[in-house]
Amino acid sequence: MSNGLLKGKKGIIFGALNNQSIAWKVAERCHEEGAEFILSNAPIAMRMGEMDELAAKTGSDVIGADATSLEDLNKLFDAAIAKFGKLDFILHSIGMSVNVRKGKHYTDLNYDWLQKGWDVSAVSFHKVMRVAWEKDCMNEWGSILALTYIAAQRTFPDYNDMADNKAYLEGIARSFGYYWGERKVRVNTISQSPTVTTAGSGVKGFGGFLGYAEAMSPLGNANALDCANYCVAMFSDLTRMVTMQNLFNDGGFSSAGVTQKVVERFE
Ligand SMILES: NC(=O)c1ccc[n+]([C@@H]2O[C@H](COP(=O)([O-])OP(=O)(O)OC[C@H]3O[C@@H](n4cnc5c(N)ncnc54)[C@H](O)[C@@H]3O)[C@@H](O)[C@H]2O)c1
Image 1 (cartoon, protein in one colour):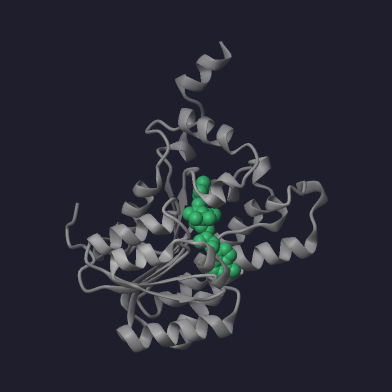
Image 2: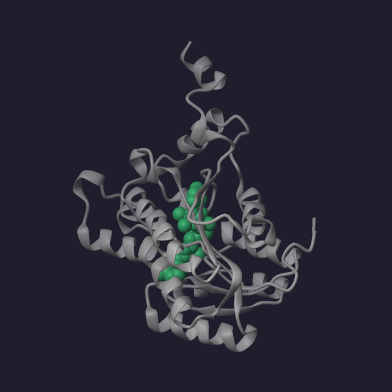
């Protein structure tokens, strides 16, 4: 399916690790819609990942950057500007919690790990936008997106400190989005259904999460391709006046009190 929605648009896509990654699907869809972009990921992820395959498929360069490092981000943006001139879109699809990885309970968080995960999952979004801001490298009517999860608003115990990281991430979208408005650039977060990926599957009880969300969503869970299609819409010229929003791509989960499917399980 291609409607040429992103023809001529240039961007940077962070976070495609393997073909299950949401960012991988976003890259495929953006390519189909005519965009050109640089793929970026943490250097360590590039060594273990399959990014070269995606790069070949989409005709993209791969440039490593630890998204917590201003030095790496400066180099990445300099390379993007040298290649494309100004940019039209950025996707931040980055998340990691050391406490989740190591199975540390929320009531007993390791604060060094908390800080690391916060920096990777939330503050890196500020850093990405700050570097783009300082280089003044976004075209007017450009679009910047990050991916988030509803645990920012409601409690999902096993999501652990990632819930707080996502709340902070969504705050950054609003706060920095205000300033980007001066430059006619929009900033939003997309709050996605639970999705089977490397990061998603790291959450304890993920299968239960997935099944519960499916039963609680009138349309069912949105998958990675659904998310990619929403990202394409948000990068396109059809959504120019949407900014500083947290947009739910979740089959209705966020508005459903209960569904018949869930009620039946208790009868
Ligand atoms: N999978 C889900 O259920 C789900 C639901 C809602 C939101 N999200 C969000 O979607 C985004 C993408 O996650 P995913 O599910 O596709 O998993 P994923 O594991 O494929 O992607 C996470 C990415 O973050 C990258 N990353 C980690 N540390 C980094 C660093 N220091 N610098 C640069 N990149 C770094 C990883 O290499 C990886 O590519 C995340 O923000 C995640 O929280 C996921």
